[in-house]
Image (cartoon, rainbow, N blue to C red; front, side, top):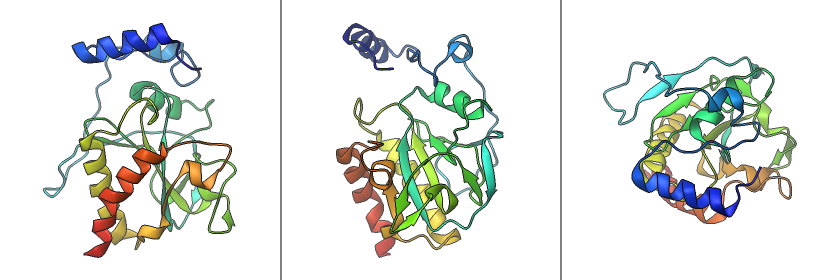
Length: 206
């Protein structure tokens, strides 16, 4: 559900004051999420090399084993808390492997060798059904409403560096939902995806 102009202005004012963001009133930010208080997450053991906190969450919204060859970037269109809770709701039948918060912390819902339910009808390099061979990484809210934060991009870079080693990830196998589902999905904003690509490309020139 799209926000009206008044709600948008209220949100901007609250963000400026550092207040808790408003939650959308669609399926992502439904009544259970709106009534929730601030959530506390248990941090996983962080390697000395990691700048960012990592959290693990359980969801039944996942499929069988996959052998990923690439990464699809998404935005959730909902608030961070709402998106996370929606992915944990069995009725949603939606999930990402990881949602990156604005402060760069990473929240993993699905192991990288299991199928997340993120892409729907999709194809990449002539191969259909991207859930079966791609890792899905999401940013909260909409990249048409805001820019990605520096910390989000730096966290994505750190994660991509890890995946480059663990699955032999190639730069040309990094894409977004808009590209694999043209006409059906619009995330990421092309401007923000280009910023992200420019930040990630140097990793593959080392």
